[in-house]
Amino acid sequence: MAAAETLSTAPFSLDSYHVSEELGFILPEPLTELPPYYQPWMDIALRVPELVHSHELRSHINRMPLLSTNILQKHRELRLAHLALSAMTMGYVWQEGENGTVEILPCNLAVPFWEVSQRLGVPPILTHSDGVLANWRKKDPEGPFDMENLELLVRLPGGDSVRGFFMVTLLVELAAAPALRNIPNVINGVRCGDTAAVARALEDISQSLQDMTDIFKLMQVYVEPPVFYGIMRIYLSGWKDNPSMPKGLVYEGVQTEAMEYSGGSAAQSSLLHCFDELLGVKHGEKSGAFLTSMRNYMPPAHKQLIQDISLQPSLRGFVQQQASERLNQAFHLCVTRILSLRSYHINVVSRFITVPAARARQLRKQGLDLEGEMISRAPTALEERGTGGSGIMTFLKDVRDQTKDALLPETSKEMNLPLTVLTDDTQQSVDDIT
Ligand code: HEM
Image (cartoon, rainbow, N blue to C red; front, top):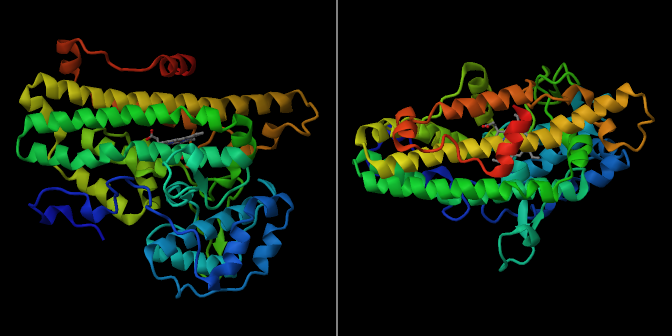
C-alpha cells in the first residue's frame, strides 16, 4: 500500500504508488495466461464477442464451474482474472441489449469476481484499469510500444474499433508517463523553493500534455463512431443510474441486495485527477462528486497518489509568490494544455455520441426501416447520458470551465499570454459545440 504522505519529510517520490517510470499507470507486462485451473474462465473470456453474437454467452457462463480464487497469488494474476471476469460480466448483462438485461449475476461468476475485486480493492465491474491498463501485450516483445505492435488480451463486441478504442487510450496513458515522472520534481521544488526546478518540470509536463492530445487524435483513425455508439457503448455501461437496470445487479452468493456500479470510462483514469490536484483545478459540487466517485474505480495505490498530491503545499500559490516570468509561463502553459485536452475530448464525445444520437433519433422519427442501421441498435436509455447518468455535455463543459478558473488572471493579462492554446481543430470543435 502507498505511503501516507503526511508522515514523511523525505523527498516526494512515486516509488510506493505502483507507477512505472516508463509506463506511468499502465500495468507493466500483464500476464497473458492464468494457471491451468482457470482454463474454464479463459475459454469463455477469450470468446466473449463471438458468444455474444451467437447469443450463447449466458448459457456458457451458466454451465461454468464455481472455481476457488485461492490459487491466484500474484498481483498480475489477479489483474488478468479481474479483466477476464469483468469482460464475461459485461457480456452476460448486455448480451440481449437494453431490453433483455438480467437482475442476477450467477454465483459461479459473481462469487470469484467479488473475491478478486476485494483483493485488488476495486469494484466488480469492468473499469479503465481492466480494459486499458491491464489489457495489452506486444506482438513482438522486443518491438515498439505502438499501434502496430500492440494487441488486446480480452475483447468486447465491436471488432477493430474495440481494439482501436482501448489501444489509443493506452497510448494516451503512455504519453502521460513523462508528466507523471515530473510530478515529484514539482512537489520537491516547491517544498525547497527552487523556482528553476519547478519551471523546468512544468515545461516537461506541458510537453507531455500536448503529446497526450496529439495521440488522442488517433481515435478518429482507429474507431468508427457508428460502431462505438451502436455496438460498443452498451458493453461499457454499468448498473448505476441506468434506466435499463433500475434495480442494479444481484451478485448471487455474495449478498441478496442488488448492487450498483458505474460503467467503465477514462474518467477512471488517474491522469487528469493527478494533474488537477497538482495545478489546483477545483471542480464544482456536482461534477466534483462524480469525479471523486470515479476514484473508487482506480487501483488503490493510484487513488492514494491523487490524495497525497492534494495534500502538498499549493503550487498555484507558490507560482503567485515567486514573480518569475518563466515559472508563470510554464504554469500557464500546463493549465492551457489541460484545457486544450478537455476541449478536444468534448469534440470527440460530440462525434462519437452526440452526433450518432441525433441521427438515431432522426431515424426513429422518420419511422424508417432501421434494420441494418447500426446506430439504431444503440440503447436509447444511454443516448446522451454518461456513466454517471448525467447529461454528458453539460458535465464535460462544466469540468472544462472549472479548468479555466485555475489560470492566474494577472499572468494572462501582464504577459499578454493567450488564454488557451487550442489547436485549430479543437478550437473548431469548441466553436461547433458551445
Ligand atoms: C471515443 C473516445 C471517448 C469517448 C466517446 C469518451 C466519452 C466520455 C464520456 C461520455 C465521459 C463522461 C463521463 C462518463 O460517462 O464516464 C467522459 C469523461 C472523461 N473522459 Fe472520455 N471518452 C473518450 C476517450 C477518452 C480518452 C482517450 C481519455 C484520455 C485521458 C478520456 C478522458 C476522460 C476524462 C478525464 C473524463 C472525465 C471528465 C474530465 O476530467 O474532463 N476520454 N468521456
